[in-house]
Figure 1 (cartoon, one colour):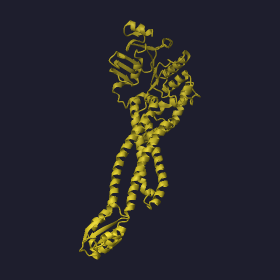
Figure 2 (tube, rainbow over the protein chains, first blue to last red):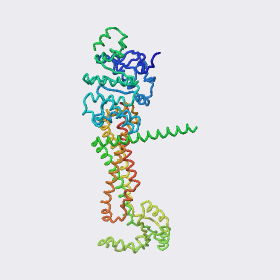
Figure 3 (cartoon, helix red, strand yellow):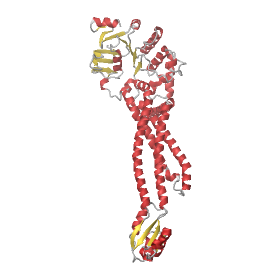
Figure 4 (spheres, rainbow over the protein chains, first blue to last red):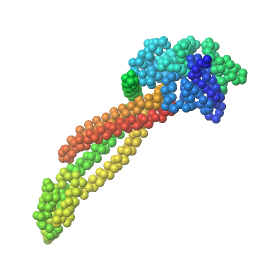
Length: 240
Length: 312
């Protein structure tokens, strides 16, 4: 029996201008509980795909279904409620420098009007589980890159999301810290969270044997080792 | 049935709890933002302070002008000039009946001529040979304490007294002042509108700087599922608080200025209680100023945050 699809793309094209589309006729699906890598060279369409998953943009044509909802048809007032099921980790962390670690991590809980007491409890639990206990009152600029990325992961996971999107989450980290972050994502996946990681780090893909969707020029060129387009594109992507 | 009712009560209580949590959160965020960006807070608050202060001072000055006009109007009397054939005593009685409670004085023609001589001083010789009957007899009615509109109404009534030929309400110059005050009031209203608009733009631009400085925070709030209202509400409250603080300070400054200036002007101009706080700065005016300041802050911040919040 096929697993339930959490994300479905049907002939999706995304254009920003008259030039080459960022995504071109992409059809794929990601099942609930999967761990998926999106890979490809810069400009391949990885970030665009994550934006579509996050309902930050509608497709130019085709259909994007997230949690069974058509992204293009969701009323803008409902999008925030859908996003509450999605955790996001950015390459540049997107932490607020003038807020403490605890305040940064608390954001996803505060938008849900959870009581301060419960917010404090959950933030404390997630920080402890990510080895950040004792850093609650620190400000992000005083932390190392690895610690900042762990704070970003903590913020993405504190709301216990069904879907975790990570855009180059280890791009700014050394190998050891990158491995730490990946372990955190794997742990979240083991708890049932669907994880989608956009990366062009081949070492990471080789180390973590998971489904890899390779993109090139806005097209899916291979999916889970299965070549979708022409072989040249796959070779270009592998060399990225 | 009872279980369903109990579930509804629990649900309603849960919603109330969330609303309270949100309100506390919004207030905390607004206060924190004001604390974190003191320059933006001070500039926005000071702008609202100036706008409310100027508006309040203009309103008080207009009221003071009217009070002064009324105070001076108290020295003026209405003169009813009689036809030559009129009976002075009968006319006096009729005037007294038309203006009950007012001081009424009959001035025969001879007394009128005498007064004119006195007023001319050394030029009184010009009146040598002038017959007393050349000047009409008149009745004078004190208009002390009456408002201009009442003076006009009384003069109208007195013009219908038997034997009356002409009525001088003696307020020509006060009417001029009244007209000037009306013009000033109209200009004041236009200026207030322009001031309010200018202040809204100024405060909005100031707050926009604050919003711009916090665009990353807005972006993150939206990415983690913050609704437009959730993102904007702390900014609305921030503007509201700045409006309330700015107008409260302006009201304090107006009351302070009144306490210092009004007693001195009242003594100098012998105005008695005409410049009392309750007359110049009535509670209704102060309340209107407070509400205007708060609304100004609220609207300005709503304008400032709307664009940024909706485009993220």
